[in-house]
Length: 280
Image (cartoon, rainbow, N blue to C red):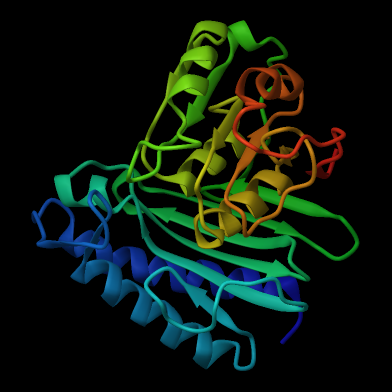
């Protein structure tokens, strides 16, 4: 199966089913195991991923699947279509009963975000995005078309970011956070990269940046953001490597100003030439 509209329909269907599974455990204070000092996983992460992988294998045999909890193939650049699933993005929120969590089902095609479905059951909201092989795109929030905001000054912008579970060490995000906090109208941290990218796509945020992400964190959200007209680059403004885990997404109008605040010459992040993974 190669039709991207059909693949989007499948992504929505399986994400909705997994979200319904998660909703049954929401605010139940589920037991959480630790993958790291602050990195949690629950029975709902595992059950959601098992459901997603089983459904995608049934519906799209032959398309590789990469899952956060270790299902499917290894995360590496591949040609053709590859599914990337995050069965519960925002596990810490979910464990504590916070509503900002979601299921994220994305498809990279020739290592570029092409299809995305993100479903947030506690928010009663879903976002979808499609970028076809001719460059045409569509992004929707709860079935209605959505697009990036038109705010063009960082001081008037609401920006999002995130922090790794370890939250410290070389390349952490705290110094950049403080610089952006002083330069922007506000900075938010909701705890889900997929939701942050979707909130850029629908114009809630003017931009979002983060370090130390995984491909399954961003595949769906990036497809939705790009379909909505967002600009997505590496932190220093160059082309995005979806497997490296450092990116900035914006409405395009505040991109340069934000990059100037977050690019850290001491971090070893390569500086780009302002080319981007963008439809603009």
